[in-house]
Image (cartoon, rainbow, N blue to C red; front, side, top):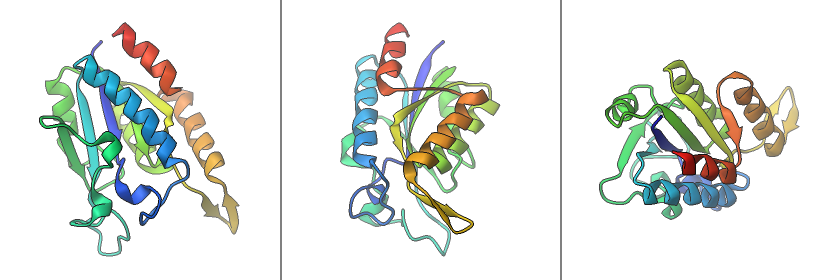
Length: 185
């Protein structure tokens, strides 16, 4: 079982003063960096996902802006794979599946943002494609949402999506637990 790390959309627009600031994105990025460091040290495959908006109504991740850049905390090193996407699902119309297959990855560790959108879509797609998935829940972030005039706080949005993913699609664990599992690989 060869693991691969998928870092989804850890980009400047999700941080303080970005166009779509998320709750606790700094903490999520620090935990993702810890996992990334472990994968780099073990020379395990890793894949940076970068969302670039192409929809005319987009308000963040706009091409040729500082906000679209991968955050300095997890910035790719030369030679590391960066997969550009235009949809929440990191597999849709990208080469991610080919990269994972070429690296003979069977297990994926997923982290990044947003929990309720791209993490959810990417994890479900990876599961449907036959990968064993782990989501490092404290290395993911989201924001508050509204529904029927009610505000759902970010913590509740995150918890609901992690609970849903853990029901069938992924092992949802802490970054520390992820590092323990990575030590077994």
